[in-house]
Length: 184
Image (tube, rainbow, N blue to C red; front, top):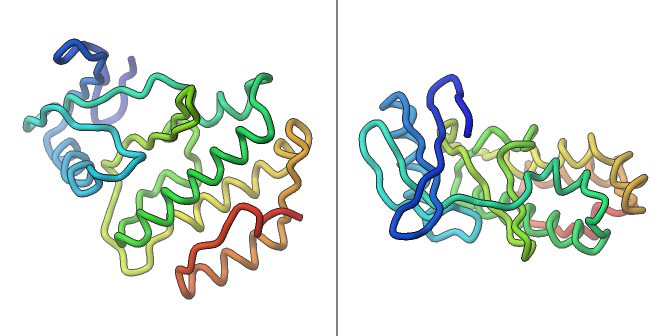
């Protein structure tokens, strides 16, 4: 499927299920496996089937990336709002666990949307534990960059000012908010 700096990704089958096989440097795959194991009960994390020193075999998301979903002419405003809400819930959850994922500012390849609008996050190799986690504030930056696209394609008008204000407040107290709080 792809070749990255630290690993190569393949598709395969495991117990009659389509799976993703990631092969690469031990230190990176061990870290990714560690965080996937920590998050294994979360709704947005792929199920890990097998973990070795230099490989991981896990569930494969087959939906669209967040970028494909947002640019898909068939995506509706209601669907977008459901997905953005689910992404916020996932980010709140990772923050509560005091983990920073680091890809949330540019999650184009890291968030998948399945046909039933469930979401999946991938690539946990850059995760760290943090007293002040940043997943939610990072995803808010992504939302801000896409304000024009959300407005043009979906008539969803997010407020830059609301996002900035809520982001600052969230950084201080980590109290969750809703997508509706971000709308102009």
